[in-house]
Length: 140
Image 1 (cartoon, rainbow, N blue to C red):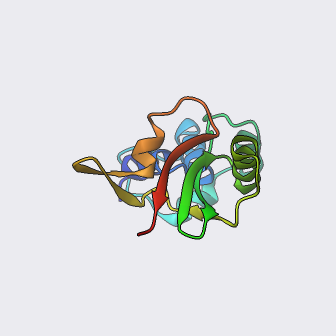
Image 2 (image 1 turned 135 degrees about the horizontal axis):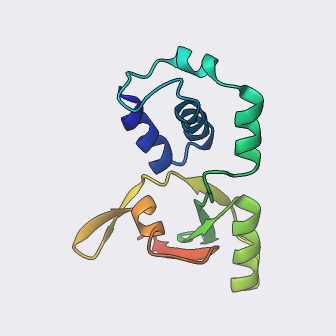
């Protein structure tokens, strides 16, 4: 796989560590976008420098996940949040009760909306402020 493709995928799928390593290696001219990527390329990096980049969030990652919180035996709400605790706190504030449970869902999970299909990853782009309610689901 080309470095360029892997870099774009790491940004798209929010793989912060990999994206920062590739960014660092490109900046240091140890690899180029047109090279074939090899895991051994990571050994060329200054690991302390990459750790600082990740800690300082140089690439501006703002990880947001989606959580399914059970409201009633057959009713669920999906909430976009940074982590499980934030999702639960938002749920408690919004619904004035504790959820029955809380589980993280894959952002690539697809669901039907209207006449089409959309993933949580695509749906998340519609929001600017988090945490946020992504939607509700009721089992029949």
